[in-house]
Length: 426
Ligand SMILES: [Zn+2]
Image (cartoon, rainbow, N blue to C red; front, side):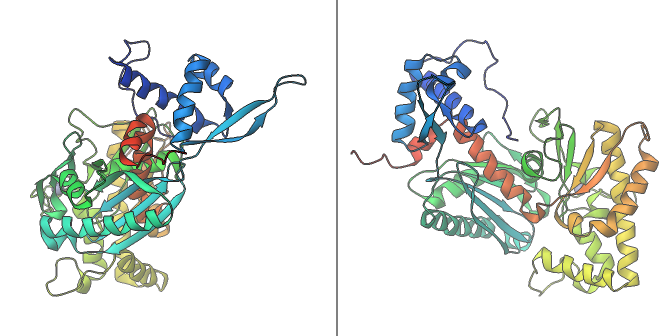
């Protein structure tokens, strides 16, 4: 499964103006074809893309020189057919860096052009308490370390994407609002690009749930399910919505703010300033506050533990039959089912994939959530919708970020060519 971003021009529309744009589109066409197959001959590529053989040979020469494809031996066609040389997507020297900054951690997932993981790590970090300037500096340092590690693994990053829990102006790379980080109009793409320095690498910023939904759709537990909702289970709760195999973005790219659906007009104050939002019922801070109030978020003078540690503490308590924790998780499970039923009534998804901490505690949360979903979904039992636990853990958004970078690079291979040094003449 590979995610194909929407085409920038309709099929059959006018070709983009200029020879450079045409060449870019043709290079992309060839790479996309190779991405779908283990290896292909030039003749096959010409057939599949509708390009002239001479054009394909010419494009292939450039892709070979750039080491984005490699010769992989010969392909025999029929009993008496002439053997034809085949090529395959290569790009082991081209890196794609995906990152995520969240309330209490920074995650990194670096791959090469084929999606092979090169770097993967998560660093506990109090982004909520640090303010945007310090947090962006720290993000930049982690990014630099990841770039170095990728270079040591033989891949120079040709693109970076960062997942952020909030509203993102994708075109400008600006985080419009991230309530749980207390960020407002942060020009993250520009700041990070400046910190990374030369050679300039394009930086994109995206909503974390959207990227995690893409990762689920391409490589997760429900991969290929065209009607899928993904829920981040962090301190904040966001939704990534895939309908008909496409990510739903909305008019301004702000869809999926499901954590701020008001579910209790008399509820607690949310990070967004409103009251009774869904994430005040099901976010990790809500669970920690009820299950182990002595470790609640926002208590002064305490180092922020990695979310995985807090969740492991709760899982141990649940396994030991701790009564307070059992009740807290049951209540969160019911609220999870209630919010899930709103999404099911709106979008009729086949699955709701729960990520982050929801996945770690799925065995305790899901029975309550699924019961509530069945009870409140108006189309039940005719429509089937079930919660499933993500297997991508807290790394889903950074993984989705890396896969988006790969898609973008394949869409426009000249960005790789600009980012990487030209090969030495032979
Ligand atoms: Zn809210």
